[in-house]
Length: 189
Image (cartoon, rainbow, N blue to C red):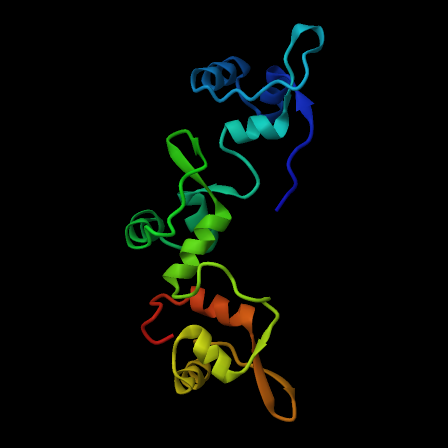
């Protein structure tokens, strides 16, 4: 995640930096009560942290609209907007801001919903580099070991890594990515 912008600017400087109309920006932020607290006021002109102004406009590192999230993950917008919101209410996040009329969410919170939709725990367990046995993969995915074997054979799960002497292990991250990318989670891995 990129680090927040630490620069300080007046509203006019910020508007020029972001290619915005300064008067419209001031009106919008004031009208919606979103104008952040000034950090400096030399010579009578308030100055703000650029990151605070970005956040007030709904732009912050790790924040996305549903449309941006769906496009970034290669998902249908209707799947995210209607399907997930209705099916996974218990993990559906509250918006953190608005960008125009669009709600803005933390990308990590939407990733949690995506994991639940794929039949995985909301939060990643262990490290993505953990090496799992076939039995551990089966337990993690909630399927039989034979299903794991068939999924590897058919290409729905990646081939494991030979760690020596014919012993095969699967990276947890590869298993999760295959599961999250599954168009019909829970059907047959």
